[in-house]
Length: 388
Ligand SMILES: Cc1cc2nc3c(=O)[nH]c(=O)nc-3n(C[C@H](O)[C@H](O)[C@H](O)COP(=O)(O)OP(=O)(O)OC[C@H]3O[C@@H](n4cnc5c(N)ncnc54)[C@H](O)[C@@H]3O)c2cc1C
Image (cartoon, rainbow, N blue to C red; front, side):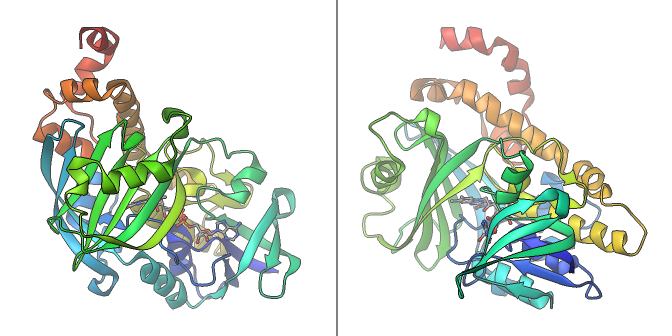
């Protein structure tokens, strides 16, 4: 019997393992052969300086001192491009991380046992029992632990077993491309019904002409005869405001993935089972960014579990602490996403609203703050939508 099972070793799982005491009997479980690989992510993390305004309730930001060996680029600006090609360029510093190396080294350095190629088939919460499949030996077995950390991502089997997997999910497709000719100091975000229905498309320069080029959409926003594959190809080959950077670009890797785009679930502790990261829909939903909150939530989970075994805290503390540190930002982000859905009914309306949304407002939105202008306009949006 283990003290702790960390079920899923992505960002949240790796940062839980990192903090869990070496005195505990811990195992990390993941279906992947190589942790973090393939990279199903844009790999963007705001710098420590930006994190201070994005997550203002933290006391310690040292977790965001990400060593250079894990980063491939440091960008200075974010350019937001609307359907008529006009753009707003905002100062916002971000790191493009090597997410696979980041996850695998953080997890391995924790010194805890890790079982790769082990798939979670199901979970029995009353018994804290995981039903697993060893993908090497093709054998099923069970594993019990005093504490189970559910960090198995957006498609969480554990959240499904607990009946809390009800959050809205966006689909994404991404290419890693070489010979991309964009400004490598700038991350590009594109919105519009042709290239990102219900979401956005991106070009994220990793340096040396390599970039993550992708699109995130919501199924309810796309027409029946369209698909995410067609949409990404349109973005790469036809859409004038993105394809100009990609004329000579070549695909070296393709991934498809999902991300929650909702508010966090109402309850994240069930007896001695804790949900951390995407499995609990911990995300900045207006941009589908979950790396920073998953890092912090994983760290909080690790600390609370250590205290639980030392007799200093009960597991419920996890719920209280992460809400205190992270919830405000995630709820603001969720409200921005809701406002965006009201604005982005058509491409025409996006362009009209953007006559009123300037650099300052975009800078606030990126930092999960709702600009005063939008707060005031919100109750009048049904009327504004008729006028526009
Ligand atoms: C295309 C895309 C681009 C994104 N870009 C960004 C970005 O630039 N910046 C940002 O902040 N966020 C981004 N996100 C969101 C971000 O990737 C997630 O919010 C973050 O990775 C959540 O971490 P996590 O540990 O909860 O989940 P994950 O990192 O997904 O980890 C879950 C782990 O559980 C394992 N697992 C899942 N199911 C099982 C199972 N049945 N059995 C065993 N193991 C299992 C997986 O293999 C994985 O290792 C993006 C998401 C997508 C889809």
